[in-house]
Every structure is written in structure tokens, then in C-alpha cells.
Image 1: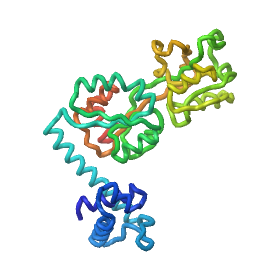
Image 2: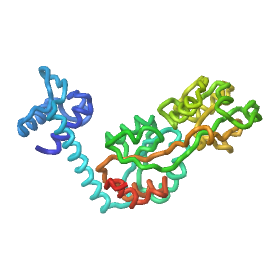
Image 3: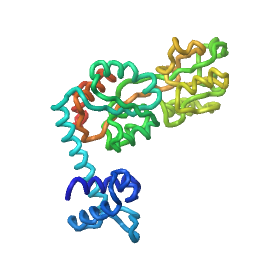
Length: 308
């Protein structure tokens, strides 16, 4: 048994049981992968895959257990490399962030600026996507850290830590009737077409829950994954917007007006997540602390150990 065989096994599963796809991803030959998997099965004395002729169609029950162990071994092998890199070059390396648009556009820029000033030799990458997409990227090792509001807590193989709470606000054109119709209520909001987030994004569940609890059916005219898109269509007069208050910047959004809605919608919590058993470089701890000052190295380590 060797790590290469385990890499082949893991990649076949990653490619949807497609040996040809695994060979392309690992820059090797399909027959070579098939041979190594057969040698691994012979050594372990169990069949890992169910085959129909030469085609793999499923993974066996013992194969699932072997895969889980193989993935942990591959992760540990990567951690060994990270430990060596940590001591050889403590201020160089790479850090891949996966975040939703709101986090990438509004929460991360000042943090990234501070981090770059502190670690100029660390290469940063930024991936954007839905909460589900960015969680999957971290689980697959395509990103180191996920930052989002929804969904991250639902992945048992991620360590997820709360960073900060935020509220929704309502945005309107400058001459909208809501601006002079205080106090703001859900019933008043429901009188107008609403432009807000797609269900998977930025606390949309809290918006739905508030209207449901009040027994009010909102007029959702348009949904989007991007706060800037929401603001664009509000500016066009297609409705009022409900978005994260962090996404409204008065200096930049002078063509719009904002109404606080803290009293209408429950607060949402932005979270940061990384894989269990992941070795965190020193600069990764620092990035987490820059993003959420209460998440010190001690706090993060306690979470890794399952103490918090």
C-alpha cells in the first residue's frame, strides 16, 4: 500500500467513479490507475469498487470505510508538508479563501489589506460562490477557509466558528413613500415589490421567517445572489430591496436610501470554517483573528480539540 494508490482511490470517487476522469486529473494513464487499484484490493483482501465489466459502477461497503481512512491519511500527509513549510518559511505560502459575494465585497477588503501588509509573501486566492459551493470547496481541499452566513454549520467535517452578527436593512429610491411613513413595518414593506437574496444567501431564511410569523405574504419580485445586483434593480425602480446592512455604503450608494430593519428581522451570524484535521499555518490563525478578533489562536485550538 502507498499514498499514490490512495490518491488514485480518492480521485476516482471525486470524479464520480470515472477512472478516465481521475487519470486526466492526475496526469497519468487509465490502465495505470486501474492496475494500482487492483493491487490495493488484492493487498487488503476486499473489493473496493463494484464493477460492470471494466466500468466502475459503485463503491462497496468496505470500500466506503477504506475511502474514509484513505482521505484522512492523505490529509495527514498534506499536514506533514505544511508542518515542514511552517518551519522552513513561516511567512510564505498560500491561503485560499472561499466566500459569498457579500463577504468578499464588503467584509473582507479591509482584512485582506491588513493581511497583505503583514504577510506580503503569502499568495492569497479568493473564490466566490453560494454557501454550499464554498463549503464543498473547502471539503475538497480547493480552498482553505470558507466564510458565509448560511449552511456552514450543517457540514460535520468542517469546524465552524461564529464571527459576528449583522442585521438586514431596507433600501429604496430617494423619493420612495416608505421614507416618510414611519415606523417601518412588515405590512408596509409587503405593499411593494421586494428585491432580495436568493434563498441560499445572506440570511434569506430570517426574512422568510419574519413574514411567516406575522402571517404576511411578501411580494418577492426578484431574487439575486449579489447585493450589488439588488441595489441596481432598486435603483431602476423595480422595487425595494432587503439586504445585509453591511452591503449599504452611504458614500457609494448616494442614489439610494437605507432604512434600518433590526426590529423586523432576527440577526444573522457570519461564520468561518475549515476542515477538521487540517493543519493551520501561523498566518492562517492570524487571518482568522483579523477577520474576527475574538477568535484568537487559543480559541481556535480549543475548537479544533472539540472543547468549544
